[in-house]
Length: 91
Image (cartoon, rainbow, N blue to C red; front, top):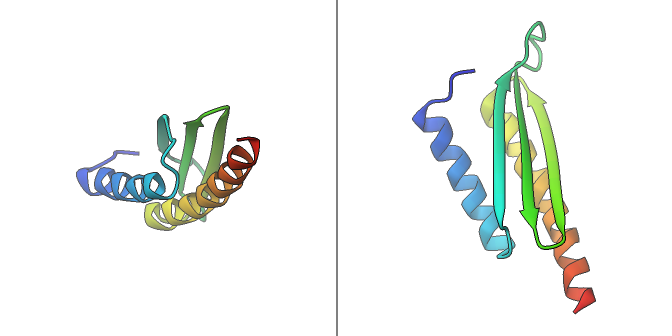
């Protein structure tokens, strides 16, 4: 799948939002691809997020890039909140 500037901007905006929720994100790897032969879920986004003591992973497949990204971010928000609670309880 060819990634354009609009897609890059949407990803950056969404991950900036995650950075405001959880300040300790060290690194993110995002992969966007078009799924072959699956017209219903044509766009797949995968991400690895490095935080202190863990690497979080999320993957979403949807008909459009925007809906896949929205669901992916919701998934990561939940994981980051759980990780943040566990991190704060250790201190």
